[in-house]
Length: 350
Image (cartoon, rainbow, N blue to C red; front, side, top):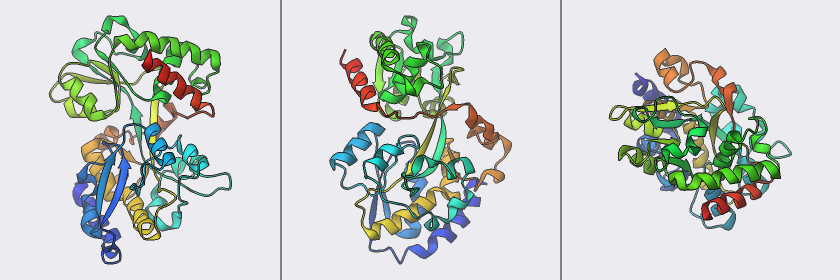
């Protein structure tokens, strides 16, 4: 049902663009492995005659650094987070986006369509939220008597079976929660609170099997039995739940929500900019929403297919009750994020 619904819409939106952009043979999209499966972009490639070359990211910090140093000169489209976009905007790394060029933006959920987090101080738009969800704890249900929470990730009882993401913002925030910092302050920790989080993370390090960088690597570690609990994306749960006893926990201390945005490097050529905007509109359209819901169990920021899904399909991607967004902790890179990065590097070097 999903594939059939989206096919006609994609053809209508994209059919007129193929001849006009035949000269652009390739666009390089820097994004996460879970967002950019080749199946997700096939319709766009077919209709425009343009190949979407996928360049998978290891972390947002690495993406930001690559843009700032100019080492990612071949990227045509990038993937800043909703709560980290301000760094790119402040550094002048992004091209302004004309929202009138994105017809599908009209169907975006209001809370994401009107967010000021993708605007500069004058109100100009530089990034477009297109995908959102939650980051749970994924675990082997046969290894735990009770559902794990964030304290499990610091428990010597599970030494050698745990994994954390190699990302300062979320990992330090989790340590802050375990240290007792209130959820509404955890991304605004002062020096004393950051020091306590650092102590916990240094004590945690020998308990970990690894700091994971790609979700594919973490999925493999679950599959081989090397990891039984990790702060994760939902991918390992979805890919392995039919083969292994897998669980997905939503810690009461706070569920880490995420939202990915579409952006363009400030130096992108006019020709590529025009086609990249077509691709941004595609990300908000029915075809992409259908494929990523069907394969990845993720929801886009548009309601374009929501009412055509069954209740079970809506529940699978957390759009059956939009109030769930209110229970999320939205990671926010603080003004002193350089201090967080310094702490994270010291933890890993300890």
